[in-house]
Amino acid sequence: MRRITNASELAEFRRAQIPAQYRQTCQHVRCKLGDAEAWQWTDSTGRPCAVGFLGRAQNGWRWSRPAAFGHVYFRTTDARRAWLGELFARAQRLADSSAAKRAEKAKLRAKQHSLQVGDILRASWGYDQTNIDYYEVTALVGSQMVEVREIAARAQETGFMSGDSVPAPGQYIGEAKRRRVSDYGARDSVKVHDCAHAYLIRPTVVGGVKCYGPSHWTAYA
Image 1: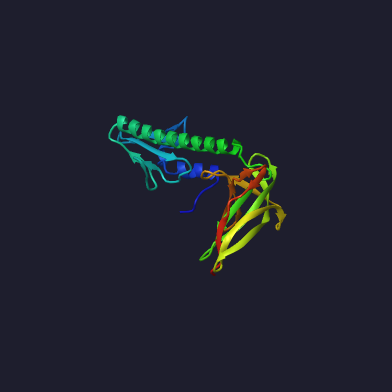
Image 2: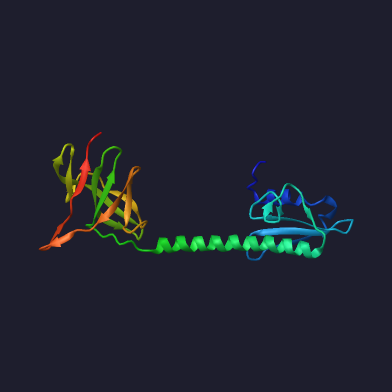
């Protein structure tokens, strides 16, 4: 079935699921606390009938699941009322869930990250070897982004094609790039390329000098 995105076309498609002889007399009801609507009527045999829709659905609603094209009939008006209540309750739950997700996203957007100019980030990545790259925060861009530049590393070999390295702040070897800060996990980080995130590393201050612990690298590949 072709997905309908136009609002007026969707409304026509939904009304087409009401038998023609009841389209002018049926009662239209809409959920006030969620995105759902329904039409209800009594057919020529006295049966309570209805057709309802959740969100942007094209298929009618049955009890807790979508139905095929067409309406639903009930044994009693109480059964129809319960069906309608379930439809609107589901719509409200979905609305509440969406509102909670929007609020959480807004909270994250408003949250200020902890990175400062001069902070050093480390990225560890590689397949069959461990590459270590270092980045320095060179500017803050609003509350969600920073500017970073790759910096050189002071490295020494401690074994066959392996060794240790520490960052060399201020010795830039890359262009400035703007990156959004992620607070996933215990430390702030930025995505530096498709293979890696660079995470904040905290130095030990000795005599007013920042000292960074070594990171182990390998170059087997």
